[in-house]
Image (cartoon, rainbow, N blue to C red; front, side):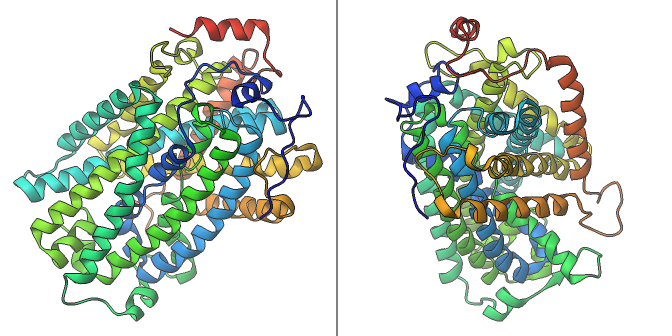
Length: 508
């Protein structure tokens, strides 16, 4: 990969600093630029969170192809996701704003491209908060059950979930410096946690599965007969985990040297997660003592059953706590990313009540109302879980079906623009087109996979609600377009006097 020399529109020379670059893109800087390159990488790494995604969906993987699909699928999906990340990083380097994906799409394709990309991205981010924090609540329920015998119920899980949301909202209100610090700790917690879990599972148990089992055992618990179809569905474990790396782009207005740091943050978060996640999945699978018992565990959390069978209840409880803390880091980072998207989308008058959601605290330079809107909406998304076990899967569907297509749109538009696209200081050079088209085709394929039924027969409880979630997002975006199309729009270079005045008024 070659790094092309910087090319900057409008000025013909590199800007003096990132604040100048942001003004060139049409926005007055109002957020605190207090995050370094490592912190920017850390927020995407924390949102990907292998200790959240891999652990939460490990039970799903046990029945949709089993060990062979989980391990080989992780390697293959990770390679394609790395292509998506590199292609997205190149566009991020040229447009380092909090709006990220939708701003890129708007600039490269026009207002409607930006509008639909923004709604997909926003609903995906808000769904991710609900999915991550509700998953954390489920693991917390399993921990409480092991430690004190408290039986988890939908009601108790919802209470835990709300407490987690309130914790994340509060932490985000203290400003981006605390968020950055927590994300930096999160990196080492995740890497140390993976090392601890894999090490314990490798050393303590007297019995392990064979390499032939781990890398070759195919298990079909879906009810579908076609093994290729089942294996394709099984790839979703990896694809779901490898999401959220756009967080680096959403925090670019709070990152020093964002034109380079945000791009590097995206790519680095993917390949580090790729390596560590493979070690985690392999460690868990080698340590399985009873496959059927792991699938049907009374804890409701298959990795917890692996810990219990391999290490005993005491050690299992301790490792569950490691996982829960990692999930808390993940949810906190996701609230930061989603709130910046709410702020940016409101700044361009795309949301109902935009004047409120774009307000920024003068003390912490944090979009306080956007933080509260993010956690409140995430809470509402999870309320149906009180009445239906299927609801959590629907929330996950909202996350992945929103975020994944949104990644490909700016990449496709950048390819369509050809030489009209002027890259920033981080560029793929001659590899831009082959990597970009690989990314677009891959996203198109997995978007179809996300919408396919995952078990047979298809019932109300087993239905894949991703297609319904996608249709609902597109319908909502279309309806609101006719209401807000006159007010919505990204600013012209350097912004209008009216826009600058409105931004200044919204620092409260």
